Length: 122
Ligand SMILES: [Zn+2]
Image 1: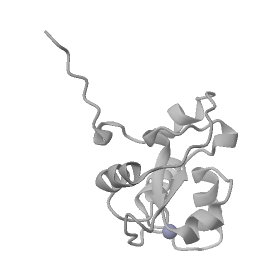
Image 2 (image 1 turned 60 degrees about the vertical axis):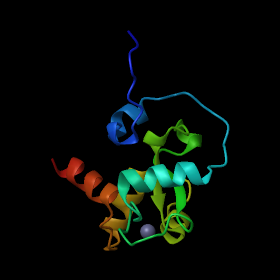
Image 3 (image 1 turned 120 degrees about the vertical axis):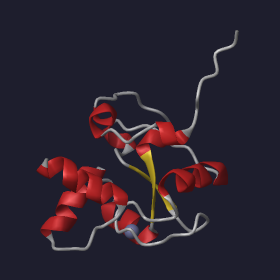
Image 4 (image 1 turned 180 degrees about the horizontal axis):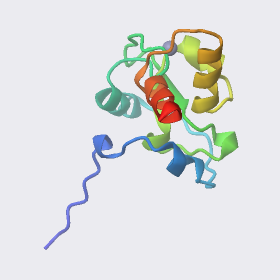
């Protein structure tokens, strides 16, 4: 009897608390097209922050929790973002970036931004 471990990316919901608790550090790696398409399959070809459509080959991969803050290169810590949002986010973690954007009255309606907003007001 062989146990089949489901490795589907859709089975890994984004959990900021779990990610925040991680202290493992890994080297920065280059993400290949496979990682992009897995993320696109999970989240759609959309920027996680502003919600604008981004094609898989043009999307940037963003760390929800930056490596410097203890985030890792697991797909659970990765989202697709447009280069504009990724550039603005810089080395902030996702929650700080979304909060800052909301404070500035900027339009953030990507799935991750909405999730963070929901979690914060819950
Ligand atoms: Zn964006």
